[in-house]
Length: 283
Image (cartoon, rainbow, N blue to C red; front, side, top):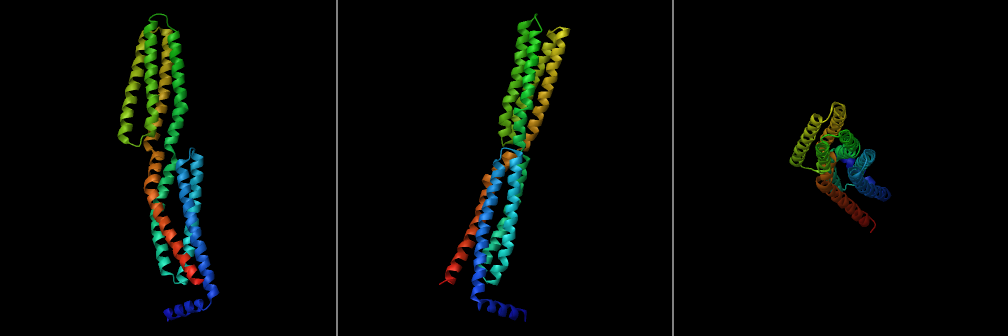
């Protein structure tokens, strides 16, 4: 009995050509909008990954979510239209798209979470900001030590230069650490940083042994400044190790690009199929 009612209802619809053409037009409009919205959502994710500030990345992530909600709403609105028109081929294409979209969305959320975390950008800001300031303060402190001694001045200056060179070596290693996607490379860089820190501390200990009591306070101040720099460097390493910007970019250029292309292919086929239906209906 139910099947008979459905058959009568569908037949009644097709006896009303205006209603059919209207629903076909609506279906084509929604499908076209779906294609645009998905492309815009995908582009917004790419912009979130490429953004150079946390604020911009978060804004593009919100835009992605808004566009994806629009995609889901339109897909839900299109399904009953295709069913009422008995467009089984187009319904299958919509089914395929929604299955692909589910896989894409899982990856997309992961990419956006990584992009918004921006750990590499945060590490870079620490390197160029507080760490740079601590390094400059260390240099000034060492200059104060060198200027405060007259005996053994050449040896003191050599030790000051050695301590500062060791700290500068750590600074030089921060950028490649932040940019590296490889754990083993980061481990090697960290080992070099540790060796350089040990060299800087050894030089300061030698300075303390060479200088008078009134100059030892300046050496102690230099040690405190080195401690501050090392703390910044440890934060940089921790953020860099999370590698959220590097990982989100790799996913966006790799898996996301392939999954997005599959979704776009399904939507393109859906639109082309509906366009052929519309052309046939007007002949």
